[in-house]
Length: 121
Image 1 (spheres, rainbow, N blue to C red):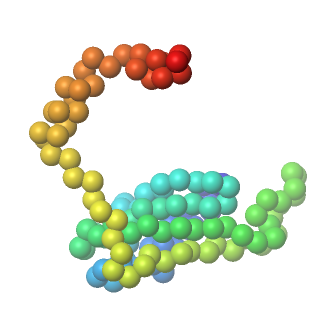
Image 2: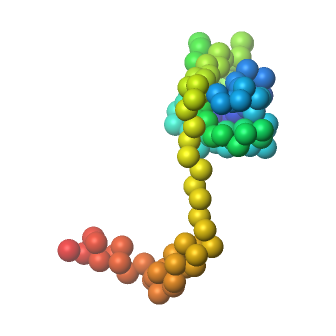
């Protein structure tokens, strides 16, 4: 997917998609790309007002999505956005310093051999 298309999608999210909880617009700095597959993009956005998280899907379609090599697209492709559901919030990942220290101590001696042993048996 072209970077130009991603930028256009993020601009449209900022102007057309609002927080399902408090109806505030999403700020560019709080929109993250979660994954890209073909012409589909998954975003995660956090509201700058109430800090609610929303999942947003976008799909690019149209006759000129993939023009033949050497041919420039005549019209820009259509961008479809799937709005977040009202009252649906993605839970925030909360890691306490104690939890992080525990993970650090568990992974301290990890050398990748555990994964290798999975495939040897």
